[in-house]
Image (cartoon, rainbow, N blue to C red; front, side, top):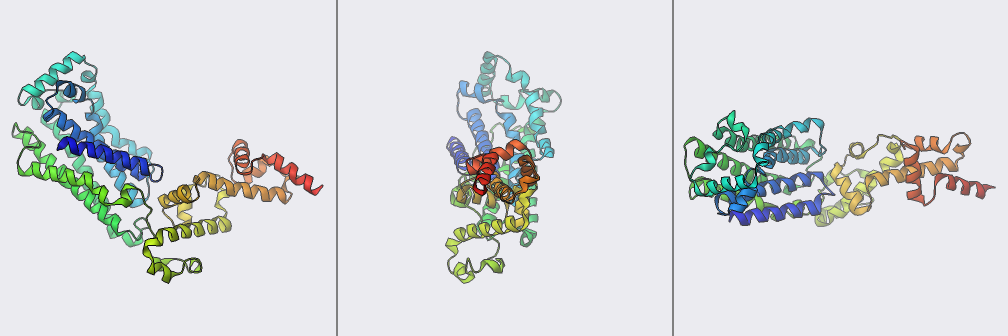
Length: 401
């Protein structure tokens, strides 16, 4: 069963990354999380049940350092979902420290001969309790084996509790947030997801503590209450996304309250009609995004700022950034960068047509339109219009001559 669940988890991570990675960065975190959990299950299966010396020699310790990322990736996913801030920051590198420490400590074993690894694998399979006493890394020379083994689930437990705290804090401030907009299923999803994760990691931490501190020989998934709960939690965790297609396939989230739509949009999307036809609200929401985007760009012209980016645009139009990403990719069929550059190019065409080139160079016009360099201006102009700015200017002059 453990092998089957691990394969389901790997398949799930592939689905999440395939369908969602280009839409939402948060889905990358979720996909990687399920991949790591699946690798952990695969690692346990190989060590405890496979009875294969080759598999044990290939798996043991070689992927362990990656498992230190389960907690950090979970935290990054919850943070990105609840704050709509999915970009990594420099301080996030600190989350990699435990993984890097273990990786460095495991280098002597990782670079040992294959024959030695086969010898260790044979002992793991044939000698009771060998896993609890063998020093696989130099960390065991500093700390006890129990501390080394228990620290990994303890770290994941701390990150899980931290993630739950972030989620609870978000729920308390929900009415002030733009993230879970008209999305009861998002609250249900995170409640189910974090609930199964908490149950799983708590059971695993208790089992590891039981094994190493009380020297029980039967590890992890034997027939007792903790192992049964652990198996239930792992099953629930890995199959839960299949009951939430909005998570699995990256469907866009909807706005907080249809009562809060701006009055100017009523002529485009009648509120009563939206109320009667909630299932079709996704397409109406895309129209709302288009309306807000165009209005903002026309009235405020934020694209003239060379630093203008998607996050700034999200603040201006009060639409979550991942909603805008979905809109540009699925509706506009282009990136935000190309969309922004089209507005800049159109502004440049207006300036050229108004005769600004009599006092400014084309390069200076490009700067005024928000382009950071001459090359980006000329490249974006040619991509949008099919000709260079100088050719466009020549055509204008020929028409007026």
